[in-house]
Image (cartoon, rainbow, N blue to C red; front, side, top):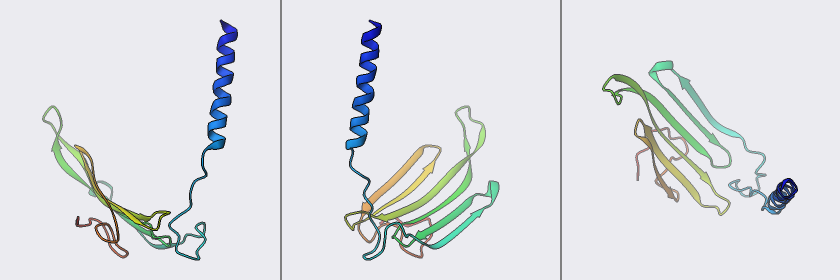
Length: 137
């Protein structure tokens, strides 16, 4: 029985190695024509952390990635009815996929979970120079 377990373990390791080695290479995408996808530059960056008063940040990269987020604390009731602080987050991010299409996500997150709205195309998500919160399309 011990030999069977060893044999099965060796087979699993070999199979896993074969799967990893045969997996397709990650695709580099989103870089504008003529730009090396490894030469991504920061176009805009802003970050502010106000401790318990919240935070906000925004960044834009030369390959078309944009992300902006604002976090604030709100007073809510916990399961026992006690007053507690909960983090409320509003944000948006977008990127250009390998197919040249812009993909975007506008989201909120609160004590009830993560609430995304996703889409594609040049409108509906965050735009260059814009900060969160983003009005949904």
